[in-house]
Length: 187
Image 1: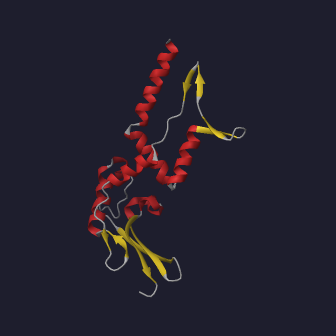
Image 2: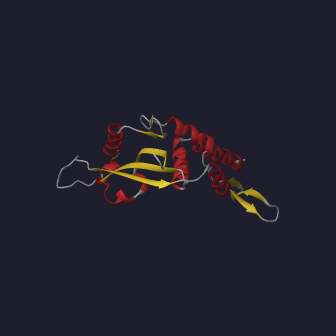
Image 3: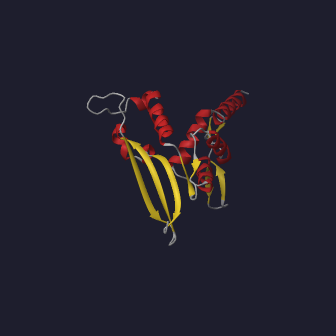
C-alpha cells in the first residue's frame, strides 16, 4: 500500500513539473540551444525518455525501479506547446521591407529592448562592462553580412551587438537581429 501511495505521489509531482513554466523554459533552452528542427527536437525528446531496443526495434521507456516504484524521467514540453509559447512572445515591432522579401525592426526599439533586458536582470547586469568609468553608457555595433543563396539571389542579415557585454560579445546569443533581406543580385 505504501508503494502505491509513493508511486501516486511521484507521478503527480512529475506531471506537475512537466506542466510548469520551469519545464517550458528548460524545453525552450534545449530546442534553441541545440538549434533543432521540429523533427530533431521530437527525436531528442524520445531519446531522453526511452531507449531503443535493437532486438524488437522499438523504443522502450527509460524508467528506473527503486524499491518497486516506477520512476520515469521528466519529459520536455511538446514542440506544439513550444510553438505556441514562442508565438505569444513579444519581440517588438517587425515591419516588411517595401519591394523586397524580408523584414526589419526599428533600431531605437531594439536598443531599448536590449538595454532594458540587461539592466533589469541582476545576473546580466553584473556582467556588463563600462568603458572609461561611464556607467550606463552603452556602445552598440551594427554589423551587416551578405551571402549568395542562388545564382540570382542573395541574403543579407543585419545584427546589433553591444560592446558592454564583455566576453559575451563574441557569442551569437548576444547578436540581435535587426533585418533580414533576400534580394536579387542585380538590385
